[in-house]
Image (tube, rainbow over all chains, first blue to last red; front, top):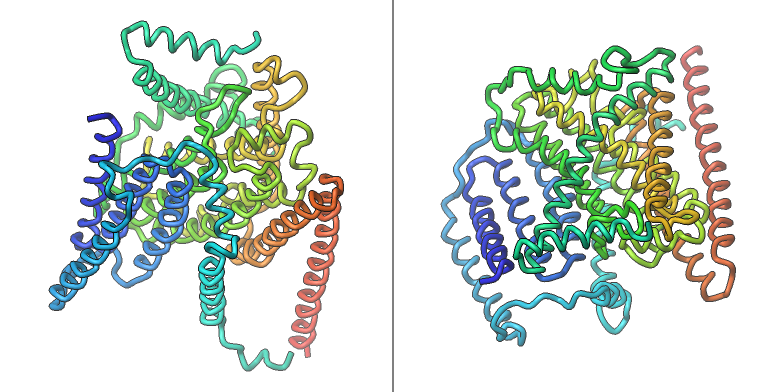
Amino acid sequence: MSVLQVVFLVTGFVTLLAGVMVVASPKLIHAALWLIVSLAGVAVLFVLLNADFLAVVQVVVYIGAIAILIIFAAMLTRRVMTDSGPTHNPTWWLALVSALVLLGGLLALILQVPAFAQAGPTGLPLADSGLADLGTSLVDANRFLLPFEVASVLLLAALIGAMAVARPAAKPEEGAE
Amino acid sequence: MGDPFGLIGRWLMSVVTGWGLEPAAALTLLRFLGAAILATVLLLACFFLIVAERKILGRFQDRYGPNRVGPFGVFQTVADFVKLIGKEIVIPTGIDKVPYWLAPVLVVMSVVGIWAVVPFAPGFLGTDLNVGALYIVSVGAIGTLGIIMAGWSSNNKFALLGAFRAVAQLVSYEIPMVLTLLVPTMLAGSMGISAIVEAQRGLWFIVAAPLAALVFLISSVAENGRAPFDLMEGESEIVAGFNIEYGGLAFGMFYVGEFLHAFTVGVLFSTLFLGGWSGPGAETYPLLGLFYFFAKAIVVWFVTIWVRGSFPRVRIDQMLSLNWKFLTPLALLIVSLTAVTDKLAVEQGWSRVPALLGVNVVLLAATLIVLGAYGRSIRRREEQLRTAAVR
């Protein structure tokens, strides 16, 4: 077993453990912090596959933005310091069934990917070309331009919607201006 | 003298392989060794950065600054450090242990981590990531995480409020910082920090993109939480800030993180916009490159201290509106205009730097006109309110 395989196994174990702790920890904030550990583990896996860009984006977007946002939202809830309710409600078996169905579907899809037949995951070739290719594929009309633009419009709509919600209602006293 | 850093690297490699290690294992060992040395030297350098900053600030405020310990007070930080070590470790009740002790480590890590991709001199750098610029942003994000963990785990409402405020500031100012970080990336055609420095051998990027450099400097100072953006700590409002429940060396780590970050701002600015190690004769004598690198970094660092000593603290609403209503739109405009001008210049065969400089001047003029009109409208509204109140 090479060093990289050991690192892979340790990271994978930590990532999965953190993922379990996200749903198992009684405190909301602890769940968010475990989520960060899990996301960081995924970033390390990207590094092991030589996908530097994806690893860095994983940290910037998921840890730097989304996890912070989740923690922020959780902190704005009431009784954040002492909040430790039950971790599951009576419909937990429905969630289990849907999670298993989703896992089955994903596995069925992944098994059809030709690269999965290989003995182990192989890293990307060490070169800048992958990054440049990723960049051009996002602005190439024949490749991912449409999904990229659709996602941009969706995010723009969400941004404008958030501003419209957050905007204070116009005060009647100042209506004279 | 041709290649001292490569010479040291090869010598170390021969020593380690002489012990009977395989080359790959030896390289790994040397990488770890290099990281440990870099981090240790940086943290030791803090002793002098802190005392130098206090001396300079003292002169700005017409006083001597620390001058008791050692000649000119240079060992003041050592005395402070000993005092911090000697303090009793007070653990507040109700803290969340793991996040509480992890937070200062994360904050220092986010600052030291940036130095991994900084090229000090030709052939002297930690690692040349091809996504270096983005890496800097991602490491900075970990510092934000550390602050929010510190504020929450302290079990203190003032610490929590301070953390809210700090995170609001850090997350907001990250946006113009990242946007203006794109400008050197576009001009160099690469996100690798070494490639950005290489591309500035002819002309520094501050000439082609002065507005981007200014916005980057302002938002970096805000990311650092220094005056005039030092309202993460408000003694009169939130007791001190996210770090009130910390004492001894744990507080010292936040302190060291802040002061080291201030110098790191200088280093990043000089690397991205002032050409890093490049200068006359830097290729033939890499040690000269090291000298240029630190000289530029120290000049920028001095400017940030100067700003710190000159401007009063802004209010929180002013801080947020400066970012969201001014810096972010301006940064968006800078990025899009730079991209379009750069492409047009290449296609039409214009000279690149004058075209970019022209766009910057036009944008600056437009910004000043808009700002002037905005200021007049505010004054007019206040005048109306005042006359209405008199009547």
